[in-house]
Image (cartoon, rainbow, N blue to C red):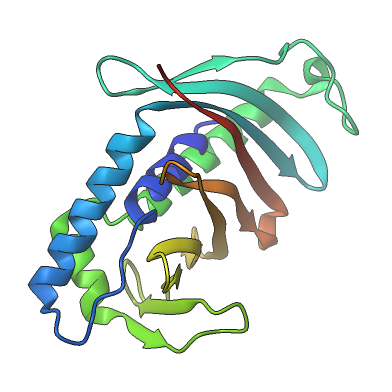
Length: 226
């Protein structure tokens, strides 16, 4: 499903958001976040990994896709499907019994949802600055994480929160609360940092409660290319 690339973008965009000291100016903070993000993206391009995407609609698993993922020479993500698409889905109806029109409607909906979520990846220095200008910081939570939350970032009433480990300055989880087609949408993701320093999304989930749709993604088996 085309929702997959947006989560990779979010990992790259927020994977290494540092905490600024009291003496750091807004411009210095923006530059630090932008440069750290670029460094993490460059490091990610040295890895290949496995990604599992599961789409659940109305309580039924409508699609499961397992991909081998890596970056090509052109710097673009490449995916090779590992599972047999003709195999019936577990705990759900076989793929051949899913009406093509139903699949098309779901695909179009997820594509629109992806376009909304893409706006929360802070793709430019200006977007990073806007987030930092709007963000409020909280003290450590029960896990010792430091949180930054910005409201009304893309549309009225939305929130983008990032939890960071103050010792490593690595993002540990993020949460987006927004609306799509008038209905609440949430995106949550948890991060893992590899021994080599790469900070990546280990698990992510997009939920649309009103439509009973969720997309779950797991990224694992990260291997550094020789």
